[in-house]
Length: 78
Image 1: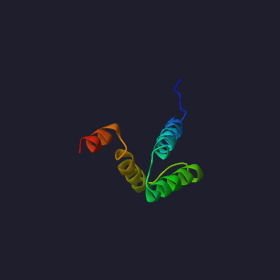
Image 2 (image 1 turned 30 degrees about the horizontal axis):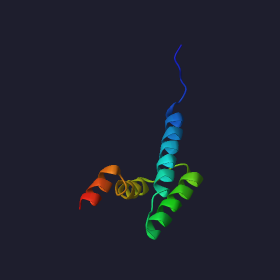
Image 3 (image 1 turned 90 degrees about the horizontal axis):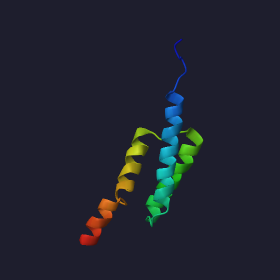
């Protein structure tokens, strides 16, 4: 018997949970006012719409990368 259940919804929920955790982690950082406002708006959008648009994800990843351990080391060395 073939399992016809659609697992794409499970993957979508897992992705939403992962992004939500990453947003929460980033909000614990000392973000500048504009970045904090934007990231909080992404959190609200994620909660209401269930996901981010590709452009929102890209912008989030750029902000997130500024606070990565690798970037912190570069900044300290500079």
